[in-house]
Amino acid sequence: KKKIKINWIKINNLLMKNNNNKILITERVIKEDNKIEDKLLNNINLRSYLAGLIEGDGTISIPKDRNPSISIVFNNNDKELAVYLSQILNCGNVYKSKGNYINWVIQDLENVYKILVLINGYMRTPKYYYLKYAINKLNNYIINNNNNNNIKIKSILKKIDIIEIKPLDKSELNTNAWLAGMLDADANFSINFEKKNGKPKRVKPYFRLELKQNYNIDNNITLTNYLSNSKVSKDIDNELNLNYLNIMTKIAKLFNTSLNTRERNLKLKNDYKIYYSYLIMVNNITNNLKVINYLDNYPLLSSKRLNYLDWASVILFINKNGQSVLPNGSWDYAKNIIKDFNSIRTTFTWDHLNNNIYNN
Image (cartoon, helix red, strand yellow):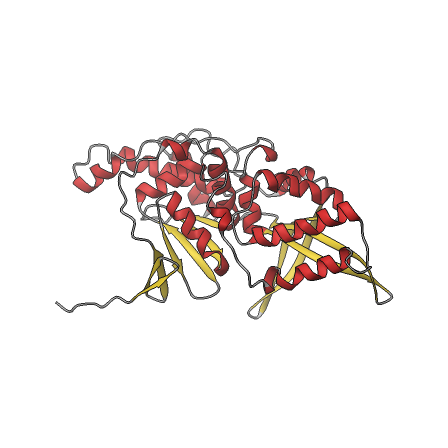
């Protein structure tokens, strides 16, 4: 047989393997019993954060003739976070793909089951629809193979069980880490500088979150029929008309700000598409302190945390010292901060992954 040579590159104690235009990032970890540990089941912070992250940048894929899979896309700067989550959850593979992103992919049935169990009960957006669908498909797999004597299938069935679908999480946003996961996916922290007649006037830190208004369900009729006819589904169709208005209204209320709508014309090849979204912007110190209060309790995990901390330091500086364009005032302080901030950041540290509320 022809031997295939695999080139391994060691980066930060990780092993990276070329694989069809993707680079597999993994560690030499021996996986033992795949049953979900009580430590994970009892970790509400991690479970709710993971749900928010998946609802922001994740996809629950449900092919017609295959088992469900779950993937989460990360910015290229967040490879460490993707690897960290795959390690503490002991599942999935992390790939560096073409383009400026990292992909964490969970495909084997036992680990898809693990993620579905962990996020069940913590979903808040229309992606809840696909959670229901994936759980029903997995439950039907268990029922349909209950008497199957195939050794591999019997081994899988020992590690999974019927999942009871829990309702949307309607608890207050400040009671768990769901919003932290969502903000890691889709929020933006910026620092603007306002001038008057060409002269410095004030620093304006902004918090921004934008989500599309509607969630289009693929093959809606097929999915609805599947769910309605499922052997283990009950009252599955009563929340199919979900959109992002309710959750964005709650987030705006939490930060004491208004909810705005926005429409943009996006060019797609030779055509234009109108993109409708809900937009939350917090631009005053008092309300930005509410953002800080939440994220102090439920911290971000991505590299966005570094930008958040710099952004928050500007707000705290202004809150303590007021606005000033004089030397060593808020203007100078913020100008110094943005030298290593957002898209031009070159300094990255990951100490916050070592000890936090998500791995305790």
